[in-house]
Each structure stands twice: as structure tokens, then as C-alpha cells.
Amino acid sequence: MLPVIPILCLLQLSSLTHAVPVSALDLEVLESDDLEPRGAKCPDNFRNVVFNTDAPNHPGWPNTVWDSLEDNGVSNWIGFTENTINKSPTYNVNGQAAETSCGIDEAQIKICMDPRNVNDSIALVTGPNPPEYLELFNEPDYSYEGFTPLTSAQDAATALAPLLAAKTTTKFISPAVAFTNTVWLANFNHYCNNCINSSIPIISAHVYNYKPDQVLLQITTLHNTWPDKRLWITELAPASSSDQGCTLDQAGMINWMQTVIPQIVALGYVDRIFWNSGEYGTIYSNNPSECNPSLTNADGSPTALLQAYGSVCD
Image (cartoon, rainbow, N blue to C red):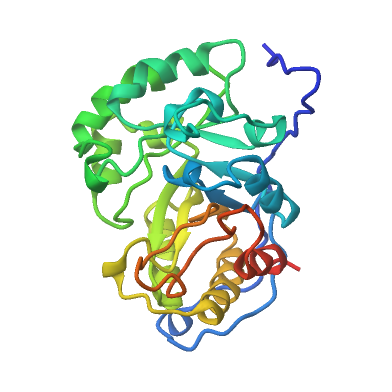
């Protein structure tokens, strides 16, 4: 059944476009600390963002933020809900539902956060307007500040079994692991009776490292584990917290972006990346300019980093 779309909202159909490898990255490149910026032609829908739970704390949220992102080549966003922004308390503004535009709602990649959300996700994917994609669990191998429960591969397989069995047109994205190359996904595949091979076409992962060669090594190792799957890096940045050693200034962040992203494109098997973060947010509260991943300012206007993100595929 075709989804019913409000008449004022023009649905932008997003299709995966596989990148053509520009050149293979051999071991010597991966081990080098001297990677330099290079040009790239990104696949359709390649550049995307993450909206974190503190996004509503800024006056530009959500529509001014999204307008700036979209104007600079961002296609989609992922957050921490299977609901739209205006139906998710996580993204409320001053305790009230945020007013959103058709564009930001249509651009959302939805997620079944953890076992507590499985029943709602079943209703979503079997309802009259199933999403094109649904990610299955956010960092089950790591509980960030207790926001989501730590979930073993076996428990995740048990919890997701009825969702994976649902009759739906939705394409499932694997659980997004925090630790990219551990055995969690392989164990999950074992306990869910090979469901990754049979029912999940996309492998998702979160990748943070201020060293470009280590980012590429994580991604290539993940691909070598799942060579028949397309990859989405659903969180990407030099760091996500102050204990990860990132001290890059703004110029360094831009250089990191201009170095890493074209190299990811060149791999040929990563269809989408999601920069963290789309909203304003700092890594070091006492030094906002250090390792600042923000693509927008507090008022929603674009940062220099967003302008670099918008031009990295030119």
C-alpha cells in the first residue's frame, strides 16, 4: 500500500545510490597519519546529520536549524525516536510540542531505540504510512548515561524477533553499535537465526576518532566482516565526548572533515554518513571552540563547519 502523504507536503523519494569506488585504500594508506584533503563526488543522500536530545535548548530549533542544513546539502537526519519531532517529548520546546515543517518530518530516519519501543515500531512499520527505513536499537552495546539500557546480543535478538517478522515494506538497518568491530553484531546474527543476512540489508555503526586513518580502519574492518552489506555510519565525528582526546580547533575540524569524507566516499560501500551534530553543542563546556562538531549555531544559522560539509562533495 502506498503511503498517504499530506497534500501540502511533497514527498521526496530517497533511493540508495551506490558509490563507485574512486580508488582502493591499501594498507599503507590506512596506516598513514598523513592523509590529506581530497575531492569527491558524493552519492545521493550521502550527507546527513544527528539531532541530539539537547537540540530543543536552542532558539533556532527546529525549522531554522533544518533550513540551514538543507541549504547546505544535508538530506536526512536521525534522532532518538520512532516518532516525528512534534510527537516526541524528547524534542519538545519548553515542554510543548515543537512546530515542524513537512520537509524536516519527511527527512527523518526513524529508530526503534531499545526493547521498550518494539511494539510501537511494529505498529509503525505495519501501519498505513510505513517509513522507508528503520534503525533497530541505538548502541545496545553501550548505555550512554543510562539513556538506553545495555542490551546483550541474545536479548536484542529475542526482543526484535516480532519486529523482524512483521509484514512490511520498511527496510531494516542493523542495531547501531557503539564499538564498531566487536563480536556484538555477529553474536546478534547468531541468536536471531541469521537475520542480518536474511532481513537486514544495511549495517549501521557509530564511528568517532580524531585520527582520520583510524576512522577509515574501523570502517574497512566493518566492511570486511560484512562484505555483502551496504554501510551507514549513523554517527560520525572526531569525538563525542571530552575523554576521547580530540583537541582540534575549527580549522582542524574542517580539515578532518575534508580529509575523511572523500576517503569514505572512495571506499564505495558506504551509502550514508550522519554527522554528529546538526544542532549546536560543544564537547568541552569550558572551551567551546575546541573539537566543536556543531553544524549550526544556537540561532540555527550555519557554522563554517556546515559550509565545509556542504562543499565537501563539490
